[in-house]
Length: 121
Image (cartoon, rainbow, N blue to C red; front, side, top):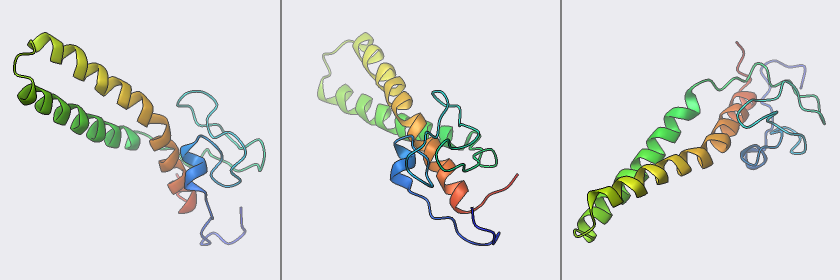
């Protein structure tokens, strides 16, 4: 990273959303499903200071909850003859799948944002 502590780091948010290093776009950002790697193996960027914590979870809950509730209400009124058990099978499973799909990209975007703004502990 640059020597100036106030300099803005140029990050690639699209690369981060795909699980790549937000600085070089080549190395891996995650060492496992949601564990951020300590450093990039390609460019050596230190990811330790950019810890997302529970921030991405809030966005995942809001997005997945909105989609599941909107889908539940829509199908509930469009198909009133469906049993409640059908709704209870479809929409919680949908919310879980959406949550799992969104968790890693949103965590990566939060880490990239912290790297861009040089957030320190």
